[in-house]
Every structure is written in C-alpha cells, then in structure tokens.
Length: 498
Image 1 (tube, rainbow, N blue to C red):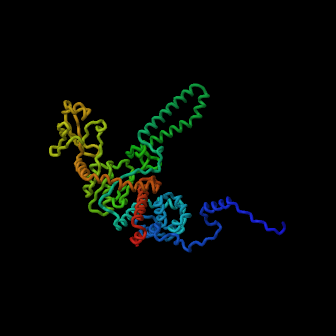
Image 2 (cartoon, rainbow, N blue to C red):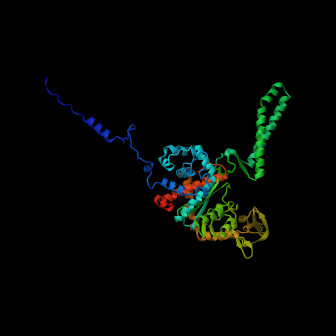
Image 3 (cartoon, one colour):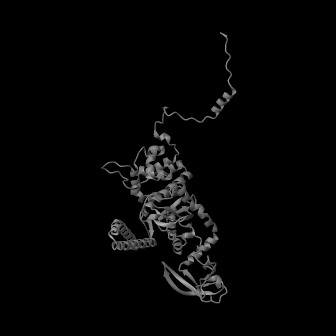
C-alpha cells in the first residue's frame, strides 16, 4: 500500500559465511607498483653494520695490491682512466664467496644486487673487463690466499698441531672427446691409414673399369683429402707426445689430464689442500695435473708448517700418499706423518701370503717366511728412481705351505726399498695412535664438500696449470673467508684489520 514501509530483506546466513571465509583466507598483499616510495637517502643505509660485505670491502682496501703482484695497482699518469683493481678484486671475492664465478654472471650482479652496488659503488664493468682482470692477475691469487692465512694466524685460528692433507679432482675446460692417449692415437692412425689404403684400392679398380666409375673418383677426392689431413694431425700429436714424454694430450686445455673420478674417468686437475684441525681452515692449496697424490705429501706438509708457523707438526693423509721418499722428506723437516699402509701385493687377491706375513730381521738383513725359512739378500737394482734390494729362498719346492705362499714351484722372492724402514716406523706410530687416521676425513673432506657443493666450484673456468692454480687459490680464500666470518664475526674482523 502507498506509504507503507517495506521490511528489510534478511541477509542470508550462507552469504555471511562466504564473506567471513573470504576475509580469513585472504593472502598477504604487496604494495602497489604505482605507489611512491621514499628510499633511504644514502646507499650505505641498505647494508647492516655487521654485514660480511663490509669486511670484504675493508680487507681488500687494507691490502698492498702492488706488493701482491696485481696489475695496474697504481694509476697511470696518462691515458684513459681504468677501473681500480681493488674494486674488481672485491667483486671477485664477493662472487666466489657466494658461488658466482662467471664473469657474465658477475656483470649481471652489478646492476641488480644491492650488496654489489654498495661494494663497488655502483660501478658497472662489462664481462670482458671482469674476465680480463682475472686473466691478467691470476698469478697473484696464491699470494692473496697466503695473505689471508697470515690474518688467520694473527687471530689464533690455527691449532698448529695436526694438519690433514688430501687431493680432489676438479673438472677442466676440456671434454673427454678432445683428450687422446698414445694407444688411442695409434689406433686412430691405423684406422685412418687403412681407410686411405682401401680408398686408393677402390679408385684404382674404378679407373680400370669405365669412365662413370672414374667420375666417382673425382667426386670422392675430398674424402681422401680429409683422411690425409686427419692422419697428418694424428702424427703431429704423436710427435708432440714423443717430444714431451707425456702419455696423453688435451687439445682445449693442454695441461689437463684424464684422471679417475668417483664414477669412471674425466679430464681434470688434481687440487691439493692441507687443512688445520682446529677450525677446518685451509692452510696450503696447490693444483697439479698428476693423476695420483704420491709425490705431494712433503711439499704440502712443508707449506702447511710454514703457514701455521709451527716448529713441529703432525700430518695425516690417506694411503694414496704412501711413499717412503715422501715420508723421509717429512721427517727431515720435523714433520711427523701418519699414513695407512697400502696393500700393493697382488697375492692378497689370490689368497696367498703377502709381504706382511714375512718378518724382516734387520740385524741379519734377511726375511723369515711363515714356514720359518730364510730369504737372504741376492742382488740390488735401481728401478723407477728407487734403490731396491731383492731377497729369495729356494726351499719352496718341498715346503707344505707353498700352495698358500707362491705360484712359483721353485722359489719365493721379496723386494725391499732402501728407505723402507721409515714406512715400518710409521706403521708402528699409526698402530699406537689409530684415532688420528679416524679424524682425517672429518678434517679434510669438509673444505672440498663446501667448495664443490655449497659454493658450486667443482670445475675450473680458466685454462692452463698456472691459471687453475690461481683460480683454486681464490676458491680456497673464499672458503676460508666464509669460515672465519662464521667463527669470528664481522665486528671482530674489522677490528683486527683496523
């Protein structure tokens, strides 16, 4: 009816429930892209006082780059101004600590990473400039690494009592397809020569038939030219192996070598580290293209002893370093090595007595076999750079233990190096302190795992042995820097270099 008030429409209970659910289940909303924002007045306000990048900045500024061997550490009086090497070094140290090693990736960080913008003061060098800096100054990186170990020593971060030594394979800039061993080259050359011979025989037969077949010879002349070129290339590589005395050749990175890795083989370098037990810090770092660790125990141990500044030192390594000559060199340098004894005898796999089952009588200079027979000295020889003495007995033919001792029906021979007594003495030390060998992995495997996995540096970006040595020194410096920042903290480090 006119003038009559209409009753309000009741709100449905279902609609209210949906509104409540929508309100409760909403997401956190960001700020609108068209909203004006007042940023801090200075870039320095973005970086906290205890941020690690502040230490990188202060530490590089405290270095004498000219003394360390960096190129253009002093600005030239004439010409176009260049980038300060300190700024590019800060960029590289920051990148390697954060797992950013590529020059192109570092270039991208200079325009989007607020920490890098602060570190190098909004400089934007291109990737070529960044890569060129590393190439020119790669030889100065080992000195830079050693300079940081001096700071670690100043902060009393080295125990200087026990150091663990180990090696690990890092992939080189060289594919397996561009690495050749001598047998592989000889096999390729034989196959190419056979193909050339077969080709010439086919074309000669075609020349005797008809002109149509002769036309095919002209069409296939490029194949003959290619085969001859390949044969010439292979012969030149074999000649290079003869001149250098090497067993293999790599075409992309000439110094890299094929090495055994965890699964199969790869073209690698062998990185060596000596790690102090106290805080798992690297005190010495080297790189070699030797596939084994056998010749690197004394060198790494001496470098570690000098780095920690100790009068005497104990070192532990795995059985790959076992060498009487290397152990003897360590003892002469007042370094006590602890290595497990390797089992090199093939008799163990055959179930026969090994050299360990024979007792050496030093006074009489002979061996006594398990049956009580004496193996006396017969002759000496110089083999593979070692003086070796040989001992033999001919009592085996009637010995009841011969089936368990040797496959030779007449005699058994034992060899002994001239300095094998140092290994025997070391075995007694290891037997008296087996816990040292058990601590080895906990000390030395940590840095390699961090560098390869956390820092994504399981491969090299540079070529040549000298270059990869410098690059690995930068990786080792980055690892130590991460550890020290975690252990000491930024304020204490800044105070140490003030």
